[in-house]
Length: 151
Image (cartoon, rainbow, N blue to C red; front, side):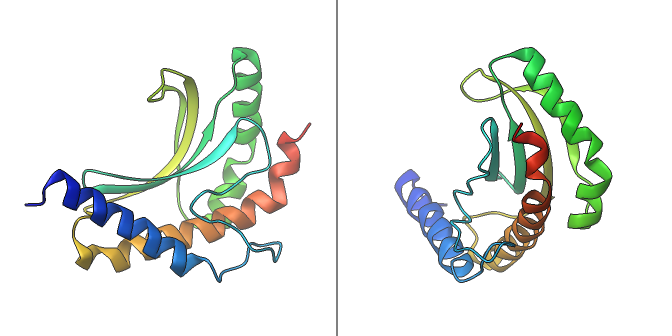
């Protein structure tokens, strides 16, 4: 069992390792990119990487202060669902409305992998592979379709 400080350091070490591993991989547009803090370039859209308990996830979060705009963006994104599945090779979980950690209304489109623990270094290769494959595919999809949301 790890102390809180040891767990925090191990968690930080994982994210640093993932960032270093992903750093040489260019975006679909050939640009250098910060994969860990991916910038979508579109307000109210962000990519999230999470490891909670024993599950890793990659999510696209849509959040807008105006509920009508939130609904419009979600519907636009929903129209791209078949394209997202084709581009990434996985079925994503769609959640129209959730409340995030700050109490903000969001919509999430996510994919997750259970039974991966950041505190177990033996799981790191599987975690890195999970994040890499989904981020690279998601980046390719996003580069081709973000224009839909830039209006």
